[in-house]
Image 1: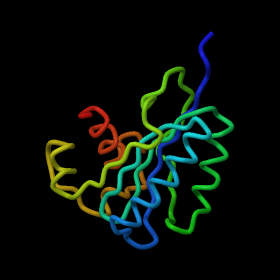
Image 2: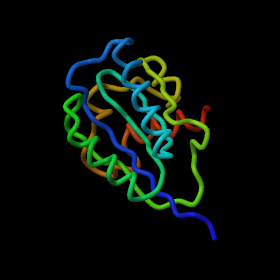
Image 3: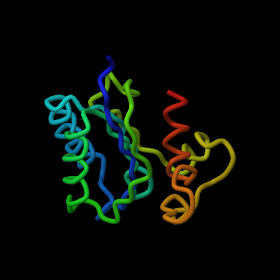
Image 4: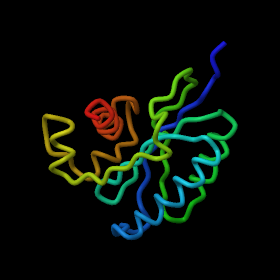
Length: 142
């Protein structure tokens, strides 16, 4: 019998745009805690936004996402997708990271330049939102 895991992906606006040193500090802390909790995933920083995918045991993911929603380093946390899975997508990464600029986002998506507000689209089909497309394109191009 396979272990049931859970994933959540979300997008949020950074309270203030983090510089490289702040991002490195955030990642170091997240990677340490995620390793302790057996949580894996991916974090993308794009034009003042976080796009993140986390996976692990359902109770640990729910608890972490509850903390994420209260974290003052960002706001307007919008869940894009969540579901139960039987296999990890990021089994070797406590937190993969990529800081993406506009040109890289265009290359990953392969068709057009993204506008800041378009990436944070909260209406319509969240699974087909520009943020989800960026996340999926990034994962598929690893």
